Length: 114
Length: 114
DNA sequence: TTCTATAGTTCAAGACTTCTGAACTATGGT
DNA sequence: ACCATAGTTCAGAAGTCTTGAACTATAGAA
Image 1 (cartoon, rainbow over the protein chains, first blue to last red):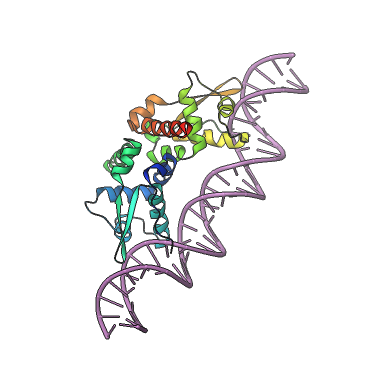
Image 2: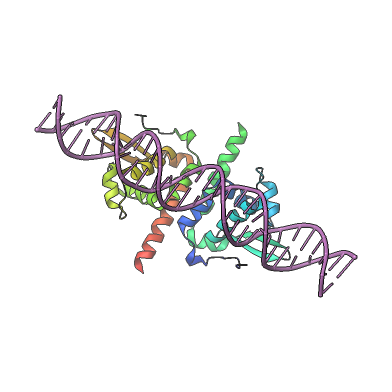
């Protein structure tokens, strides 16, 4: 089985990040990870996400987040522990990612207030 | 022929913006528009873009930028004049869009220096 | 050490999107 | 009225995404 691919900071691209975050399911996964105080496995995150989906689909979404550089996945026993790569993409892309997440969160809370 | 669709500020969504900007051709179009001092027609912008493409494809890309709310297109005689909707999306999304464009520009200049 | 269970990956085929050539609309000039 | 230019529309081809079934990887129990 192909080992998990994590780009170095140099290999991360704006296009890859935007592509990863242009899908609502992936943004949801990513913001849920950001909101967690500790690393989360894939299925735990999937349970938070309201729309259920097959695990093959979930696996692909995590792969895209991982290979964009947004998330690091480390095997811990039988599961993967996922954490946002904060420090690394923060250094590389400045406020871009946090401003995207803020805008998404703002939009969500605006919708809920209705 | 269906008139050009421009969302109001309320109708713009983060997802729509990110989707529009997750394609390298559209980002190129959009940054070229941002860099122009006056409104530009579609084919003028297309000439700046190094990869040539059929006008039907170009038209679709402009449509996506327009319907995300990034660009306003107004008919001026036989052509369309396109301008970024700066004030409107700035108010709505704060620094998100400018931080995305900055990151793209930084990445491009880094590549050119090599 | 084998068996079983759980977590996630891979692959191929069907579903869905995007791209593009050809035909079209809209406008202005001759 | 005709022609030229700028862009749109549409349907089929080309490409991407989703998903069920089969797989790998690990841990714990028998």
